[in-house]
Length: 171
Image (cartoon, rainbow, N blue to C red; front, side, top):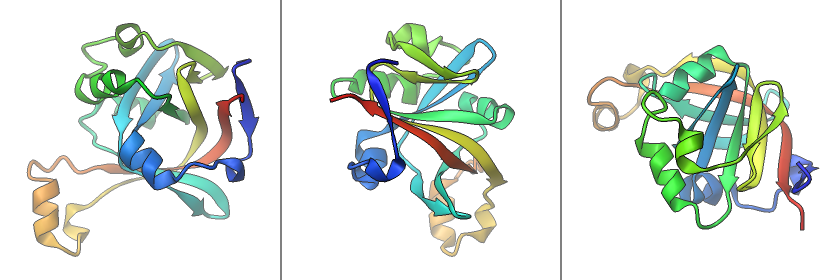
């Protein structure tokens, strides 16, 4: 942990749209002794219910989904430059078939009983689930968009979580 310092979420200087949409994130969940992560490029950071919050959408078919449903905490890790191959692997391979920590060589650092960040991260958020809701494809205002995004009916579930702590690399 000595590589990281805890900061207030308001001290984050990065653009959240670029972080999630261009740099991509690793949504990481630890249940008991198993760690699983997936690459994400969709999500929102902001304020919800008077709390600093994040909203993620995960398809029920993803292995990480069951980890998120069972657990109460997770981390969002933004890796340092040079880890595109890790992000690609974690976005295309399932934790059902691979031990992603072993396969990627990432170094987990336990920050509490059921959460880790990675030594290779530049920024990480510890989050606690607050709200979970299955999205309904019939509620989309644009039905063509719904058909395009969910042709097989594998509609996302939305997870809203409070940002409990933020860690960044020390200068």
